[in-house]
Structure formats: structure tokens, C-alpha cells
Length: 373
Image (cartoon, rainbow, N blue to C red; front, side, top):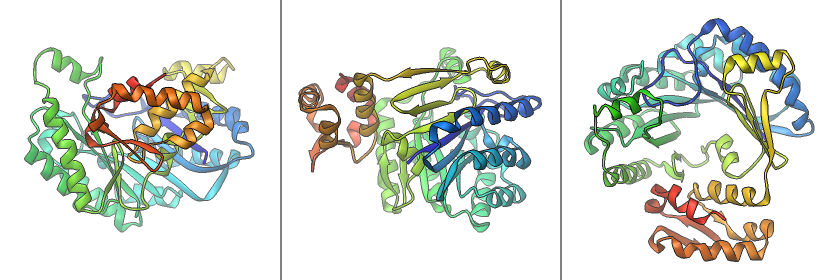
């Protein structure tokens, strides 16, 4: 189930919490697209005989692009890859960018899934996060997208935000679930270095919420969502039945994918590659045939650890029988022996699957690092 990921590294402004690579310069977009086309041409042979099932435009902000620019990229994708008739084509966007004309054009290009950066349904929280849209814009754009034929819409929310009460979180969540969405991604706010939020935290402009409050918000997220027919299938993702993200699910199943654009990653033939992050270096390298990415062949140990990390992010968990088939009985025995370092109330083994419960998922980073070889 190969997929293609395109990193569109442009944003009008930087959100206070974001550490993803992005810039605000429109004048470099033509050079970026030219370089992206060259990268497509250079990498397409890797999937020469494979059918691509998913395309994902992420960022940054893909909706920073004009429609004709998206069309230019798509033309080269179509000419270099075999695309499935049941292709899932996801496009990330901000509410303020999605007017009806833009939505119609996205639909007509074959984009059939929107991932919208909602983040909160409270205007004060949006201001704190330095988001450019309002609650009214969010509601309007999602309702309009649905009316225009987008039946697969995902919304992003953030919890664990300073000064966000449980009542405010419940209100935001319920308003979001009232909208015609079929998928919800909910992320705990993290304070990343070199972000505005990190600077504000260091200046003691706010206090972080206690872990127990964030855990309670996570559990409330799951409870309210389940009452609205959304189920948790990965630590940060909930969906109506059959509406899970095929693209992201492929990551967690350790399937192959190719990443394009500055800072994009790829995984294929047990190799991991990392593109140059800086857009100027990316453009210059592709236009002068200089190396634009680093590549490494993953060791058995690295593949084993990645399998553990990716599977235990999902509610289904790690298939122990497939783990044994891939890495051998000895590795399985050693892995199971490391479970003694994990609190028993954080996991369960059922029908050959090892999975984490809600308390375990909330501290999954610590648990997974404990289980690494």
C-alpha cells in the first residue's frame, strides 16, 4: 500500500507552537515547484511497478498554493506514478483559505479528503495559539466543504493547552463533532524549542497544565467521541467506522512511502531517507544535481524498534505472531521479557495482540522506549 507525501513548506504566519519547517515567501514558490518536479522525476523509479494508494499534501500549509500551482504538481504525479482508482488524496488546509471557489477547484482536481487545521473552537484559545482564523470561519468552511461534495473531512484539535478548562475543552469538542466531519485528530500541546510558545514559557507568561488534567482531557476526548460514533484507532486519531486515514495508517503498518519537498522523509526497501530541510539548499541541490537527501539502510534492530513504536501507537497494538515471523522467536522472547518493566495496568495481551489502554497510550513514549531493544 505505497503512498506519496508532499511537504508544502509555506505558511502566512508561524503558529506559536509549531516547529515544522516553513517559510512565508511566495516569490520562491515557482522555484520550489520546479524542484519538486525534478525530485518526482528522480524518485519515481522506486515505485515503478507499484500502485500508489494514497497521496498526502501536508505542511506547512498546502492551501498557501494557488490552484494552478497544485495542478502543476499533480500533472507530474499523474505522469510518473500509477495511481489507484480508489486513491485517497488528502489535502491539509486552514479554514481561512477555503472559500467556495477554492474548494470546488480542489474537488475538481480529484482531492477527496480534507484535513483542516481547526485546533480549537474557542476564539480566545485560537488567539493564544496565534491562529489566523475564527470559530465562525471554521464552522462555515467545513459546512461549505461538505455541501460541495467533500464527504471525508478530518479536523485537527489540540488539548493540554494552558488555561483551557475541562468545560472549555468539552465545548470545543462538542462543537467540532456537531460539524459534518468523519475523522478527528487530537494532539496534546507540546512546547518545542525555538518556538514562540517556548519563549513565552521561559518568560513565565503561562504555566503548563498538570499531567493529570491533560490525561483527563484525553479520556474525555475518547468518551465524548465514542458517544458520537467516533472511535480511537491511534493515540491521536479517531474516526467513524471505515473513515480511518489510509495514508497515516500505512505509516503505522510500516508500509513504504516516498516523501517529496524540504524536510520530507521516505521509507522504502528497508531504507530511510531525509530530505534537506532548508528550501534554498533544496532548490539549489535539485537544480545542480547535488545530493538533496541522506539515506540509510536500517539495521534489523532499527526495524524491530520501529515496528514496536509504530504498532503500539495504535489501539489494535502489536501483532506478536507477525513480530515472531519477522524477527524470530528469540527476539519475541526478549521483547516479552522487557514487559516486566511496564506497569501491568497499562497494557493487555489478547488474541496475539499486545496493546496499550488509555492510561498506557497517554504515556506511550515512555513505555515504547522501555520496550526498545
